[in-house]
Amino acid sequence: MKADDLVKYMADMFPYRRKSSRDWIGPVSVGLGLGIAVGVGLGCLVAPTTGEETRRRLRDSAGRLRHSAERAKDRALGAAHRARDELQESTSSITGERSFADEIGAR
Image 1 (tube, rainbow, N blue to C red):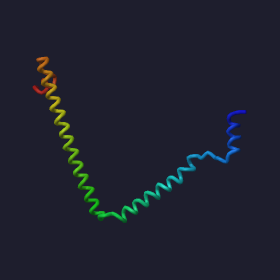
Image 2 (cartoon, rainbow, N blue to C red):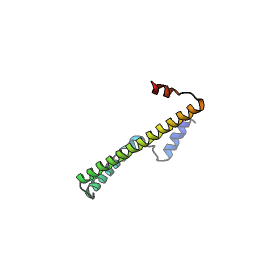
Image 3 (cartoon, one colour):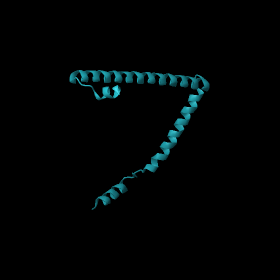
Image 4 (cartoon, rainbow, N blue to C red):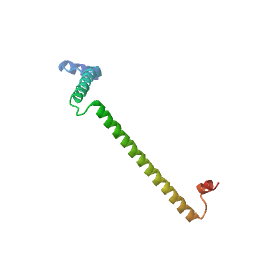
């Protein structure tokens, strides 16, 4: 008896059919779509402010977020430049020679 024969024999004994991906993708997609639609509809109905006010708040918070990201970038660049300068100073004091960056800056 081969393995395929055993599988067919067992499948005949138990009324179980293996489901393919087509059997579950459709219902899941429909359920997800309906859930999103109901959520958006309820959100619109119970929104505490008008659409114009909500868009203004989102725009303001995006501007604040951008401003804080720019400040963080400037702080990080400043720290990197300070670290580079300290490293160049310590390297030149140890070797007593001018670094390549010093030579470029002198030109």
